[in-house]
Image 1 (cartoon, rainbow, N blue to C red):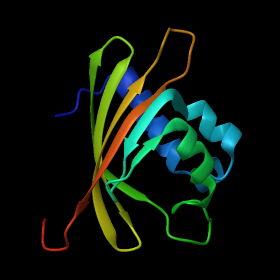
Image 2: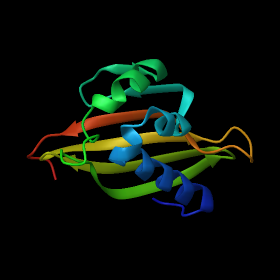
Image 3: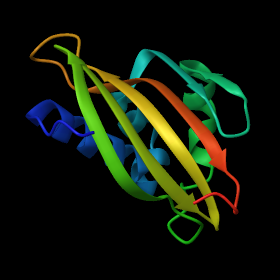
Image 4: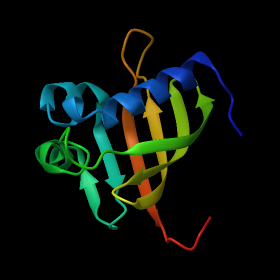
Length: 128
């Protein structure tokens, strides 16, 4: 269920920017989109902290313009409370699918939306 509010649309736009290879390859741009308290549980099961992600992001999948990119689909979102949006969606990259969930938070009205938490779950080929 999607509740298309301005906040949800802004969080989706930020999520899409974070998938942009030029953003992923540029720490200063990625830093604008990741919350300092960021944590991720990746599709591999690995837990990432903000510092680990900032160090590794330029070398991860989806960074090279000529390499595999993330193709997102089925975005849904809901404003959980003022300044907190939950997004769910799917990605395909290099023939592999994942279901994803992100929490985006905005600390105050003048600040930008930043990803606070992200989780990716691989989808086996036989699952629709």
